[in-house]
Image (cartoon, rainbow, N blue to C red; front, side):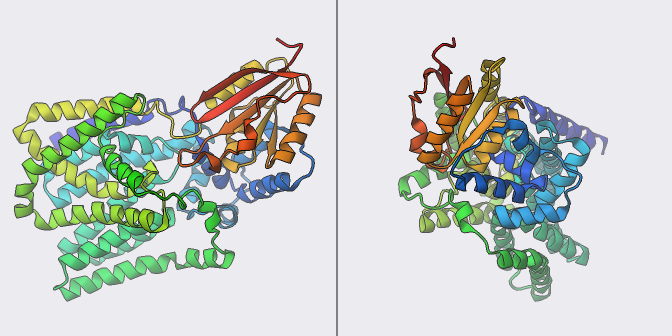
Length: 519
């Protein structure tokens, strides 16, 4: 007992060290700012504020502090304000944002404060992985399931992000644990636990439905001849869906706006989808995006390792643990096939979005834990090498930005603007406008624009009243046009200004213009 607790403590300690590495130093990125203004209850105000700017004939100077107020913890706001913001101005279910709205009141609305929830949930996921491995296989496998989640670069990455994916993983593991306990003990308590957690998962992310489908398919296939147990599962499953009905009704009454999810659909091409299918699986082990060569080598090594582990370990697994392997494969393949189906049928970009790989990750955990545990008995030095490389990858992944991350270039703008009156012109997209304002000094102005005419007027206004003008452009990794427009590519603004510097970093470019007399 003491040895088990000690080993779990060491695994958790390693996981914690990897998850707090660079937690506050790394810039918040565009999607994380959605968490800020949605959880603060200001989403509706943000929508109306930016909509008014889009329709205005004349641009106006907006102090950065005015926009920052939308992302601050506001004790006057309630859960109802958060819910209304999600229904009117976003496409996400509410649970994560409800939690964060309370979390920031206790831990603050800094980057570290908001991200600390994902860190805590990521540590809980390590314990849940241990419990799942023990429930499926044995205690030896359970430790390796916990080790894999602790040091996986993918798991570390999403335990450091102020988004819902760490919570999705934890809820998926907990629901799976209740499901497996239900099939072993046929307990009403486990059926109730499964129903509640399954509903909470759907309240966290709509794509959690892929996990629910995997649970449904597995239990139906495994227990199709045991009618009483199957009926109990069906009752629990339907109860979980019934718990989601109030939110579904609210969404239907408001009218779900699929236009807000435009970045998912409209990206044809079969070749790229299978490319992301291959590289996405490899990223469960290693993420070495700081160097293209290292990234390629890590994909090759990951696939070689997975094939080797499958050949060495799974022959015995199918004989001894047929039902357990069926469960793991269902949890991995059904969500993966669901995403691939949407990508092929709807020209989607789900596989291209790394974060959605959190859904099939649940099935990959027990598969990897079992394989590593058996490989450890035969090829111990190889496992040490694999885990050491995973720790290195997880340590470095904290230095890799997710997407448009404004901190570095915004701090540069602040430095360049010292003692000068400065303005930042930016395309009027929520995630860009709020991201840019967050790190700006309070006395720097912003001019959001929505079309070429507004850009021309904004340039005239900025040139009349500013010493320095910065043009900020954000690039979405799926498609630049989602956050940027060609009319923002202007390199000569005239009006007595000259181009001084152009910088690009972290999926953002900034062009600096100064008055001719200024140096």
